[in-house]
Length: 111
Length: 113
Image (tube, rainbow over all chains, first blue to last red; front, side, top):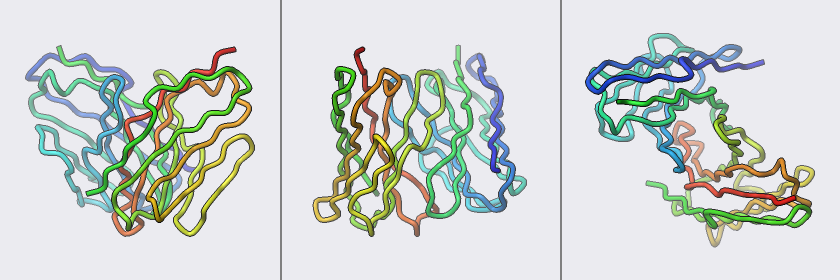
């Protein structure tokens, strides 16, 4: 069966520090991968998606970036965090035309 | 791009009553409509979905209906229980668009015992 791992679960980072969140999927090949952000009490905003290794599409201009160095690995990064980057970050995967399976999420607080 | 609106934003019902959450979408090419349940502090989980070639789908106490002409779809929960309390999100996507889903803003459902 397919599983998705996301880490870390929580993170407190100072403004201006770098960020690296990692997500890996097991039990499937060539999944569609996504990074979403959820602000407190709000909906889910798509940040990046990827349909294959090295293929990244950005939905929202910001100081975040994403990379997919391997088929089942998706990384969200920032060189310098802003206060506004705080939120709940969710990685997800899907097969084409199917629903999402979300990772357990990373709660990021920028102080 | 796609825009999904979800109503109501909060819903409170008595245990045993029914709950209905409605969503509208803007892109007539959208053809896949999932619903997710998110309990406090946890990840959203897919609970039911419907494709554009189907008008209604049911799974035990939950059902989803789709009106393609009006571009709206709804989640129906019957015989609600306290464990149904959560935030529910609707979403819309196109199979030709890398599976990207546009989400509604969520409905906080509270089931009072």
